[in-house]
Image (tube, rainbow, N blue to C red):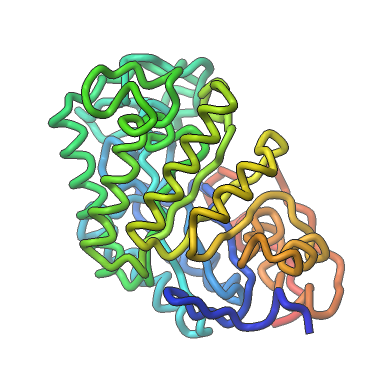
Length: 356
């Protein structure tokens, strides 16, 4: 039997298989509310041992994109309960990914009166989609004060508590892909002169304080984190390779000290093998690898022993019955990229299944 499909047990996680559904923004949360259509989508994919939801805003100013869900209101908590109840019927665990977009946002996608905030007053290059005004330039974000940073940390903590109230098994802190936590880490974006800027330790402080306080609030076994070393998404711009590696070694050591359930690594060709090896050395918990894995590639990676679990994005996006297709060696549906972020069921819950 394939290791990918065998049960997985660690100190923090007990999963029915080694198969993880990766977090993927799908923009179906009308008015930023989780809904019945989203419940159907996640329920269809509950063959995974662990589902990590799409990025979900911990606060109104973190809602940078159109139609992404939040977890900061009672109505959102109730909406997410539909999904968690449905997923749990198949003995699947589900973590909510907490994603604060920081400067990667536009006020047209935010509630009235809410401003785009960031680590520093440095806008991202490029544009983003808004439902009301089409493509718009990224604005200059309002730089957080030191007190403002602490308030955002509190918002993460409140959101994590809300996630548990909504029935989630835990939360994943999105510290990758150019969003707020990674914006703190990157010296090209972070020009702060307070305790959250400057040295590696200072630039890492926000990530560590969020992780520490969330873990204290809901349990370290219910707290994971996603990272993307060497990423340039969100106009981050690469920085010195040695400094990058030292940053992620330091973070991994601190996440290990806190006792996080897992580190989820978004792989890219730019991540040196020595960085991954160093993370494995420093972090004793579960490591999840993600990005462009085939079933065969995932099996080979698990056999190597560097990663403990493998996450699939596009595979699950287009194949609700992915685990059954892996079991039977069946052909996979290809994703429809034109409907990734459109409202409605098309390209979302209507992919054909071979196995029920």
